[in-house]
Length: 169
Ligand SMILES: [Zn+2]
Image (cartoon, rainbow, N blue to C red; front, side, top):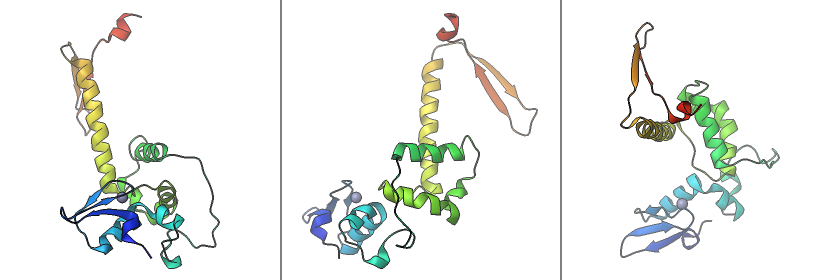
């Protein structure tokens, strides 16, 4: 069983509970919401502390042996991003049960939030924003050459500029 005081710092006057692992504040002070938060985000903590019943344990049957692998949240996340961008896999691949059979144990092992098509969109938006920023900084106040290509079904817009890296060569 899960004891609330091991998991959350409860601030009754402000009606807030602070997760002691990720510092997320919950405003729903019902015990079930703490447990839901821990089961969704900190499962491995619950497992380590023996706070989950056997039938609640995540992943495949207990008979399948546990393995150790070297990876990180960064490697895992950037690999998924690469699959749906560079390699053109549809975002929905993240929902396929067979794909999740591969990804869920890694997410659980890394104690991270599941990457769904929805939060992948958020990650991609952030990366697009960073790329736009880099382009804006690189092209600010400089002359660029714009070309459009409407020969295919899509309209392509290309910009070219001479970078200082080039002029030195
Ligand atoms: Zn948390």
